[in-house]
Length: 480
Image 1 (cartoon, rainbow, N blue to C red):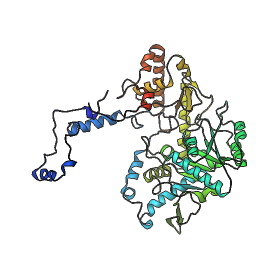
Image 2: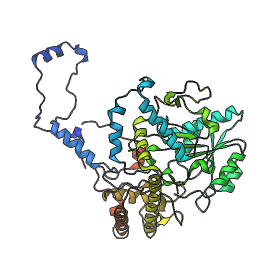
Image 3: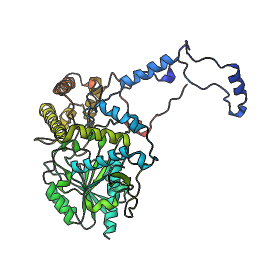
Image 4: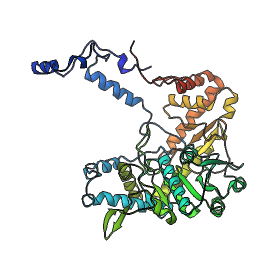
């Protein structure tokens, strides 16, 4: 196990930093005694080289898409072209300030405006806001607009309907906006149960939140009937865009009947993400909801770009400035570089990779639902569980083979779930290597299950008590 920096100590304190000179020592004497330490801080005594090596070593232990296969289902952790980083880092973008006059930042405003137009075309919506910082923030934005829309129409709506396979942020966002959450069941095919939905629709329904394809990796084939039913009840249809990587250039949520859409730029449109950011969750709406978009909106007037001055029905400002600008620039460049045919190929290859992996892995694992999937699929380790090894154990063992663990135990409706999303950027050779690793783990389950149960063996931190870690997290190092 790797030692913490605070646990390391060197007898050789070699450093290029000079000792304090006379004037600096005199300056120290002027500091009031009550502000001075009574004893030296408990800091490690290390040279600069030791410190550099320590943190470089830690960075090399990280699991990241640049170094490892990252089959993280429902999160689309795909490779992000480094050329996009260079564009975003250009001083033309990185050295401007949000408070500059509109006339000084016409290029930046053009990027934002055209990104809104591109996303509208890709999703079939009429207008977009780029303000939301990520997907859950986009959900919050969309539900605030839905609430404002219903109030403007003098309709009292108190419920949001959400499938039982939905992302956990959906019910959380609905509750945060003051709505009662009503769960809609999944049928035997893995789709929204339309009969159950119709029973639960009422004049209290504000909206139905859906992911399509859903978290089982299946396209909701009855989406048009679902949209009609929701609209007849006076509700809106909200699209959770976490799985948009399966649809870009193939079909559009707006054409399916969705009224509000959020897109995760940090998943679908090649923005690096993880460890809390940087995210971006733009939200698009149909024309009836445009007045309620967050302000300020970027408008184009007489060939110039400006901010909307008057928006009395807007839900207001969601965050500082105009979105995560660095993320938006990357996505803008990605979309412009690929074009419609390139974006279609992204989704087509993501679907191909997922179906290839599913076909190979179903020989070892149960699958949640038979047939073709979209960009991701859900396996079940219930057979392995009967042998004493759970999905968690398999996920931990994968780390020893240099593969980041897929999403496990989600969606909750699948026992011992392993959700796998290979994305379009992985080669067949990488996918075959992943299958071989799982075959090796399957042999271990039969021949030496304890090796899997004790995994991981090669990471800086070995198997932890996850219940205790959640209930009593130890987040601070204390020297003895």
